[in-house]
Length: 411
Image (cartoon, rainbow, N blue to C red; front, side, top):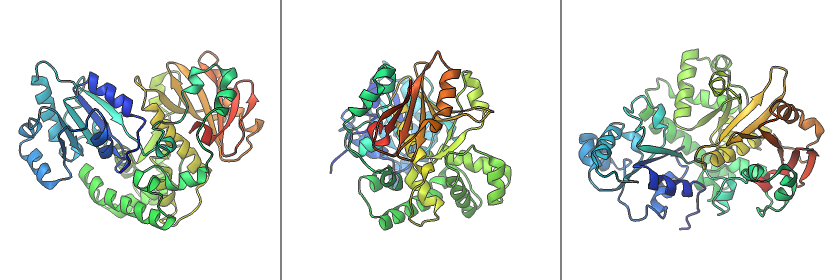
């Protein structure tokens, strides 16, 4: 079996050298188990999964004894026994001298957002997120998109840098339809088989993963909310409107969205503001963890063509993987003004900013860059320039600091 390299592999190696506990989280079926089992720094380490009923029983009966089974351990799907986190904290706190990389934990839920988890392991753990595979990971390159180039090169060189990228040309519709879950993306399933796989993914999520996170009274209501959310990719998240559409109370919608976010199914993208506190209170935009899954949900199981919204979601998924390979972590937000100017994504790294606009068409023009121009004008100190990612084949300048680049040259 060929194991494709993942973009976060170097960061995991660094975290193992620096921290006592490393927690690898992300959506189910994103490849977390394969990633930790085959990472060069972890090969040969004892590996226990709480998907095994006998292992789960031992972890529940005596968490502290379980955590002391081996001097170094990898524990898969740790969210299935939240009490194990406190036991691990007890073990690492008593260890003298501290053992770096003593525990590697994986989970299909954000442990920091789970009320049942009694401790965050603050100061002891590094949390690393693994998203579905980027296009370059699927190609065996083992990276996210080439977004760092727009920070590491002066703006006048951006066009030259984009044109020299070696990634092969491809159709965004193909990648948008199949998404990045390894079983679908690398397995190259037919559209019919892909639909079956996504049906199984949704059923397993509803019937197992969701029940382990919280009690949900009506799974049909929850699935209806998922489908409605999949039809709102890239929109500002209006919970009241969403509740009216699916005929659910506002508090139920709020709770269900939190569960979807905790399990890495949806992404609430914050708005850019110089004041970081304001980013937390402004209305976020709604996206999914994978454009293929969103397409399947939104179509009710039918196979169809992805839209411009799915293309935007595809770009965001690559940006999330890029963001989470950086320590300190980079930031991805969106920008919108009261007067209607908007930039799809704002990338922030070490206080420098790059605006990214996504256009499914093949020939973006001056009318497509009003938002980026306004953004550059409003943030002259930190905004380097803008990139229009499009579905065509040509790279060219649109303005002094704004370059149009085909998606396959940066992703």
